[in-house]
Image 1: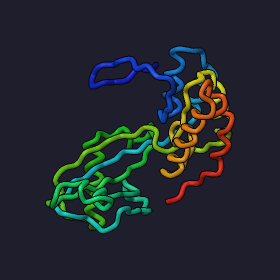
Image 2: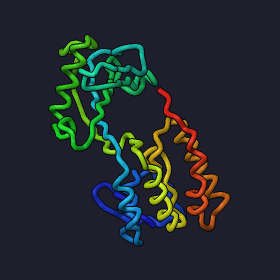
Image 3: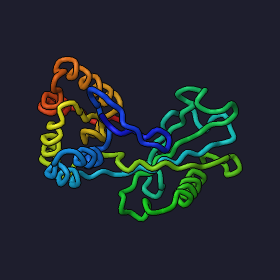
Image 4: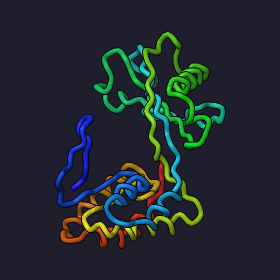
Length: 228
């Protein structure tokens, strides 16, 4: 079983299998509470991730641009990408309003990451006004959400550390880790969906102890390449 957070209360959930997308460093620490995985803990700490601060800006207008995604390569801008959910589906924002999410990437030890949400929000607003996307009076509200493990960083030797982690995770026979964060694989959404399908297939084909078979075949995902 595993512990789940239900509102503010923790409860234990019985299960036959767990397919996890929890970032590897956090997952390994959870496993370490029950079985000794010291080598995996040390290796997981050497796997580096870059964080992302998602800044949602609500506008008093039905649409900011007709584009779903916007890219900003200019180094002086605090955000590098933005997306407008209602351009996927108009029901994703109230009638007459829209929300645009600006992506700010930052390392955890950076000055940017240590800023408050209010400070980051003001930086985003300053830059979106500077590039002419909107007027300040059109902005209704700003909210921030931080993702600590957004992007895996492929440093020299990362595969060796990843193999150490997976070798020890295979000791938990019914736990499969997958996805970008859960397998330290910088992939696309469709890749992550395929990884989920492959994990389910592994459970179906190896129902007694799927984990050893799963971690022995991770090379099947080595060909994934990020596409933007």
